[in-house]
Length: 323
Image 1 (cartoon, rainbow, N blue to C red):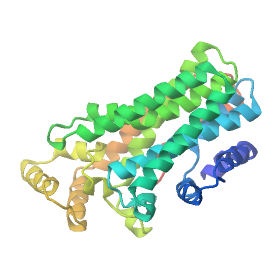
Image 2: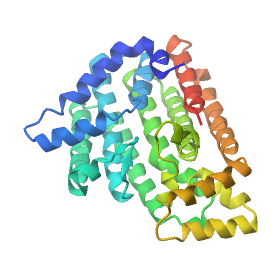
Image 3: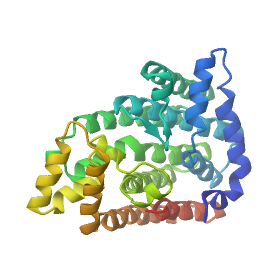
């Protein structure tokens, strides 16, 4: 099932969210409009806004406020992408040139700052203190996650450290989106927490699968670069797993690759071959499924409405993307 089919019942809602997203990108500064529109239109699935809308529809849906908050969540997400690419010196984003490669690092950082500020202003104008508290705490967590990733060293990396990083960098925004939807709907505190936990678990799974996809050989068949995380020396779960299970001779090769000044395509293929031999990607997929199942279990206490079923199916979609 495609994501559009899965979210067919809320397509009108998502269209309204899109209107809110695009509404702030018609400023008097052409460069700002160009950079923001480029990254916002680069193929994102709008999963976080969808989760927010679905969560609010489980309770007392509050139309326009929900659309605005969902747009603010997407602004925050997009701002982090712009900043991440500068920090990582990334050349590509979703198989297209990163904004920094077209407009430069300064423009990318400043447009990211604008989107971040716009997100907070949108939520401030709503005057909902619990929502503001949730999103400000989430922003702090995401910044901490970036720093944790920056200082992580491959030779001492553990899977526990990896999970800590992705909870901060990625999962917390999924969790915030789910909780904010519940807040707008007037859900009870325990229901808000259940949705926060759901979002956190599937956010972890989402990032694990994203990191696995970076090493999936099928990427080359559809024209997407293989092994970009390796070239940027990001120790994601697939690489962390390989470092743990590699034979001494393989570990020597891995160390040599990771210590090179520049990791090339041939190095990537060597590492991917090792991952295939040790069934690293099936292991990674299995780990992601564990988090999805935990996330789905959190929904049991929520109203038994079609939106709850959609959230369940959305969790499965996260791990059913092709490896």
